[in-house]
Structures are given as structure tokens and as C-alpha cells.
Image (tube, rainbow, N blue to C red; front, top):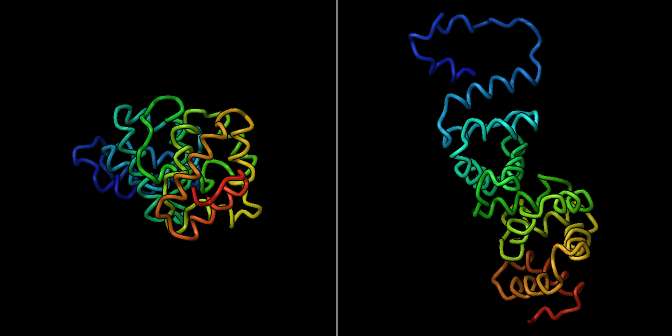
Length: 226
């Protein structure tokens, strides 16, 4: 809000001082969301994509970016994906940004090509790994096939990988619940998973990431040396 006031044009009716100390009550989350929307509206899509945190109310966040930047959503989702890879543990910056998957599913924006879109998804930012994420994916077939399906070819980074998610959650929910659940539901075929696993094992993944696929290969009953 401070930056918005600083950039307010000099001839704005009433001037900027009318906004200073104008509110004396307790500030609620909705006030911060309103201030964020005003800030977003004063910026280009490229600038707005770097503003964080985004509005806290999920429905509001899902609505406001397409409303303000209907033709520039690719700029937003690519920036958010890149930001995630740069620092997967920056909770304040990444919080709420999984709303971009709803835009993808609805066809409001093209599927982001940045690996960060995959890593954010497998790291549990859309829904908790395990049965919650499986249910979430089953309701979003486009995101599942065009983003989550890239897990076989997307290298992890420090703070975000298949191995780190499963180790952190315990009981390996991605490997033992989500992947087989998608096959059981008919969203993926066993051949798709086998081919993806074999391709990952042939790649130059770091050893700790490769071990995740070695375990998946064992689950599938295929050789880790395809």
C-alpha cells in the first residue's frame, strides 16, 4: 500500500493525504486483500506477478488475476513457477499461488512449461500428498495429464523433489498412493508409468532422486536397468 501511495499521481482528486491514517479500526485479512488488489491493479502483469503474498481469500485470488490480466496470465504463471524453483521454502511468497492450476484446468491460460509448475504440484502446495492430492488430481484431468504427468522428466531441486516430498510426508504417499491411484482410476495406464519410470532411470538424475524411481520400478516389478 505504501508503494501505491508513493506512485499515486499528483493530480489525484483529494490528494494522497486523504488515505494516510484514514482507518483507525482493527485491520483484518480482508483489508490486506483489498490493499493488495489495489496494488495489483496499479501494475503491469509482469510487475504484479512479483507481488507477494497474494490475496489470502482463495476465491478472490482465483478471480482477481484473470480479471485484471485476462491476456497476460502466462506471464503470471511462468513467474510464479520460476519463483518456486528459486526458493521452494519461501512459504510467504509461494502461499496461495497453487490457484494457478485452476486457471489451467479452466482453460484460462496455457499450461506453464517451467519445471516449477510440476515441482510446486508434487510438493503438496495444491493439496497434501496422499489421498487428498489424489482426489484433487482426479477432479482436474488437464492438470494431471499435462503438468503432474511430467514428474517422470522433471528434475528436482533443493527443497522440492519426489524424494523429498515422500520422505517428509512419511510412508511415501506419492509413490504408494498417488501414482498407483491414478492407474487404478484409469487416468494413467500401467504402461505409461512403466515407460516414464524407465525413462527416468536412464536419465542423469542425482542419486537421491533416482532412488525414488528405483523404488517405483520395484513396485511395478520392472528392472531398474531398462
